[in-house]
Image (cartoon, rainbow, N blue to C red; front, side):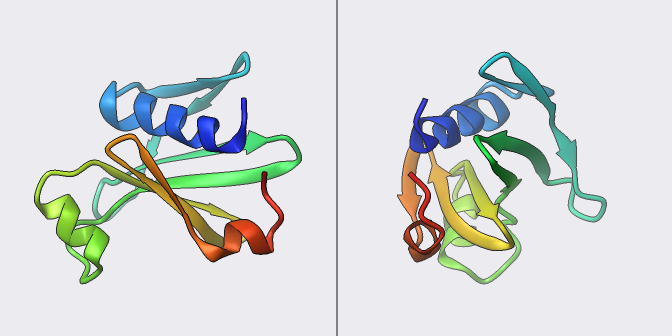
Length: 104
């Protein structure tokens, strides 16, 4: 699986299917929740990289939050403390950090 396919698979399992654990390449990663807002989160590995996904908080002022308030399901992904992209309704959008970190 490519990284892009992996991120979409995580989105599918967490937000579309509502699973309590994500399965990737034979490994299971539990889905957690943030304390304050109860947003879904999951930490997982891709090759040598550790990634984290967090559900978009609809209460912020970003354009992604505005979409979340309209019912769009969005997961934000970060690697090495930098946001690398998001998946909104099954579509991946890469951020500049994706290229900077040489993710493929």
